[in-house]
Image (cartoon, rainbow, N blue to C red; front, side, top):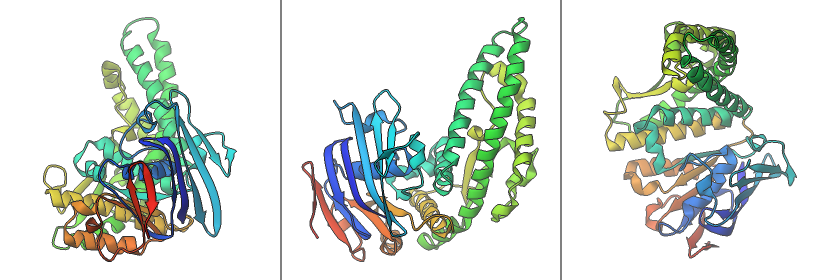
Amino acid sequence: MYVRHLSVADFRSWPTAELALEPGANVLLGRNGQGKTNLVEALGYLASLSSHRVSTDAPLIRAGAERAVTRAAVVAADRELRVEVEIVAGRANRAKLGGAPVPRPRDVLGVLRTVLFAPEDLAIVRGDPSERRRFLDELVVARTPRLAGVRADYERVLKQRGALLKSAGGRRGSAARPADLTTLDVWDGHLATHGAELLRARLTTLRALRPHAAAAYAQVAPSSSALRAGYSTSLSTSLPALVDPSDDPDTVPPLDEVREALLAGLAAARPAELDRGVNLVGPHRDDLELALGDLPLRGYASHGEGWSAALSLRLGSYELLRSDAFSGGDPVLVLDDVFAELDAERRAQLALVAAGAEQAIVTAAVEGDVPPGLRGTRFEVGGGTVRRVH
């Protein structure tokens, strides 16, 4: 898979930009603040319908504009398909495939698959659990795009159920309470149904990812302890198989068992949920536990170890997507201003992966930040223009 052409309009700092890309390495060179990251962010948005830099869409629309557009021509299996997303301020976004509108923006997921490594990825290691859940969920959707709908349904249920908990918990002893709890039973069923599918997909993906991430870490930090990744959930006591250390995705419990475990957890937590008025059970409370040997990464890892772990998770994701028989070709590898942050050994390992990718898109402030072995097409970005130099 590769992107033949990228076009943006009113996206971030760009009124308009056109970028004709090639298979192999494509390097965007330019001083900080010239818009290099904005271009790869637009590409990543087409792949995931989200930004690696902000949690909402509003900052993606250029100041003074009403909408932003990002579109690309994607070539996979000798077939080209155009994908376009229009980001609209205060309204639902719109999307097109092959020039024709699709019912929902998420219908374009899977056309373009990218793995993006950026300085923001340190948050996966050092940040809140929400950062690690987001990392895992985006990989889940990259492997199985239909699960974007499951994730959206789960978030909708959380919102509705949370509002009901807050309302019902505030009316203890009133005549309205029995009806509230009857409705809550219905929402418990919805949460367990969508939550079980999301949780099981996370576990399946994590168990497939672990050997790839561990192998990548052993390459970029050969003198360090082994990278370990586990899944932390409140359901581990009621469903011990969830914490099975095996890397075999087939050891994940059946969907109905995960759903029953969620229902049991919800029943046990109901008094506390009503007291606090919040959702206390479900995948939204879980965490991806990262460790080097027996020590957790968060709080113990050095800066270099943190970088190595974040890089290894992305390289592991890249290898996992490449290995998926149903993936439709290699994902596009995007490296956003990361070579300057790495030491010589890690730079060399990353450059080796990028040089072997079907397509890699790299941003850097100066040519000296790019390892000499990473040849390919060069672009200069500056002054509101993108110019191919060779």
